[in-house]
Image (cartoon, rainbow, N blue to C red):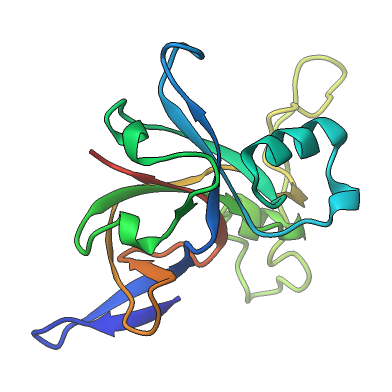
Length: 198
């Protein structure tokens, strides 16, 4: 998370994304698969950590094993300029272009109700000593006063694929051609998909 300055001097909060070394592993066409899409991988993974079927799939494309595989639907005209083994870099996007960003929220461990469910908390004065961030009494059901399963309670705040920023504006980062920035905040998520809008 950083900021860039526009021509008029206003500061724009941006998130810098590494979009380098995205290798094309498979081209899916309507004739063979019923739809048009491109499958890419990024990062590096040791060969001992790759399953044999996936290792054979990557060897057929002639690319190095990556962290994960992602598939992006594209138009049939865009498939003509791609083939397995190509590297999709930051030059795919243009400054000012609109993109969709999907990421995974970072895990926060065991979280209380104030942090996880945005509870307001109790008063911090007039005799209140240890219940400032306590959840208070919870709702019950008619079955032996059992707590409802849907009640907001302190629990594990795990990683979720729940953060999606649609139509973020992309731009060019002046330091390197392998980096790109977008004018929105995703400082709390790991970006797993960056899709170009037509």
